[in-house]
Image (tube, rainbow, N blue to C red):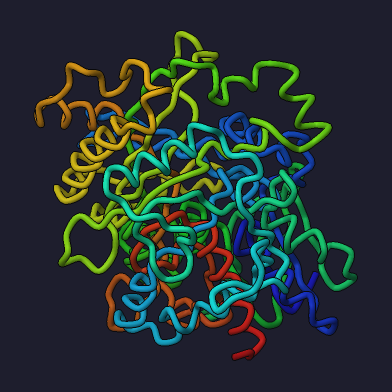
Length: 522
């Protein structure tokens, strides 16, 4: 089998790349996805995303024991389905700070400054509020406001303003700081994933072949050129050639795994596993960055949280009207706070959830505020467990290795407590559950953070973009793998530094950028 382009991974970026390439009728495009079609009935229902993790649509990854988190292994959800994690995530549409992208350009990546990437964000978008200098309406990705925000989420927005934060109606217009409701990748109360927006309209095209349940085992390398890919499907091995290029879009955990299995990585590490070295690229799998969080939670004095979803009448309301708690993405509101005036970007992100995680009673009513590290400083890695392509990779985010991340979370807990104590919550606020009223000292809060830190599941950076003189750079500013012709990477792994916000919208932008580079646009 021979194609012009082979795209590996039908996640947020891969759906975009495959769709845009197949718009050119003369190009033959093969899309390989390890997961299956997004036909699970709960995918469309916003609130149901919490139940999609840990099942058939998830890679079910866990981290290695985290040295700074009392050696706990932490779940790392990743979508294994058409749309990737955009099919299983919380649908929050955030671009990050303009300074994020300007810093990428300053690191030797021309074409990635905010002025360069903003048109790509606009290109993808169908903004429910209408077109503006920062938003588009001609794209396939539907972005809108929460359909039926929970009263607790509205109380949070008021409480944060009472605590001194400015109201921010649009986190994506270049000014991040402040508090407001999130915009979501939803349409009329249903999820709009990258598969919905980009892949499904492209599937009927004769020049696009999409293969589900096709897990890539390695790339085909001939000398210094990538000429195709091999995969396994239904217990059988297959391979195909790419006359032009192969684009790896398997995400920040699987893209470096595929490269290393193909002999692209740190030479000594590959040889130790019996893998022939095609290119000595020591940065493959390094530079892993993720957003981490803890929770500050209270019980609610009235039954207003999304625990009402257990009432059959609420599901009937959703099914008939697309209203009520089942329209909630759980993270309806949030805030960005700049702690250090010397920093270019807000270091702290708050996400509010109108629910409480209370294991003894999953129907308990409450609310949680998640302070998270937005500008992550701790660096980790992804490495091979063995040369077996079906062995899960070793994922070590190295959470809390950098003291600056710990300081952000400490400040975040104190700020969260201040907000939740504001008058807007007087009607709703019950007893504090986490960290617990007795935990007030810095020593106790540091222990609480180590015991309870969790991921916001935004792994990035493991195929870092940078110039050839950057020892850890894996791809250049054109997303071409250093030292190997005919091969690019396009997904969250190419970020030199993590954006200080949710990563789905940036991944879609990266897909748009890659497609334009391949097609010679712009």
